[in-house]
Length: 222
Image 1 (tube, rainbow, N blue to C red):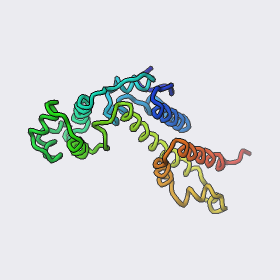
Image 2: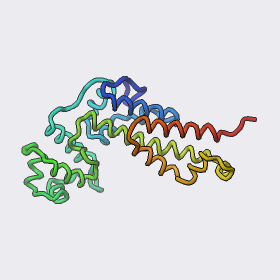
Image 3: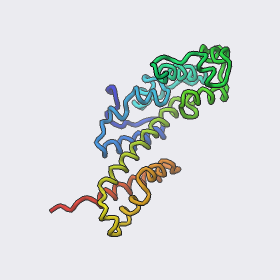
Image 4: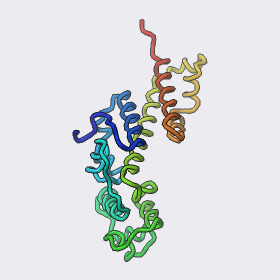
């Protein structure tokens, strides 16, 4: 294991394993460095999971903090360290309290671990820091899987963008149905729709379609 993630491994968590495989395959097709795609620090900041736990989970071993309050405190501390003010300073307890619509005493008790958070507290703090729902509460494996799926969505958008660049305008005007579909709907629209599909099987179909599209528009060798 290096500072990043050199190759997909067998992961005990099935959804994570499937996502890792898809991300690694997409990154490979695009020539991306897997150590950057699976960068531990980036995944930690995106998921809220400590870097050592990210490493362990990617290594295929079970890990994670089972206690909700402890996870909450870990991730709130990460938010305060990584989501800072424009001047580079951390938000104060008062600023968090004001932004989350609670008293300074409430915010202080939550930050110091003197009070167990409610879902309302979590939602308010997540909105203040601009992170997604369940950032402060999801189990570590689920949180990391969500972060990997967001990486997959971005790669899919980039991959679709590359596909569009290879499609000559003449191909669409000549009646090529794949090229015309791509031209009419746009790569971001296709990528966004793919990300909303209900299963890996459906998303795999989109990847197959993109592969077919790239193959169909390769210039003929002389």
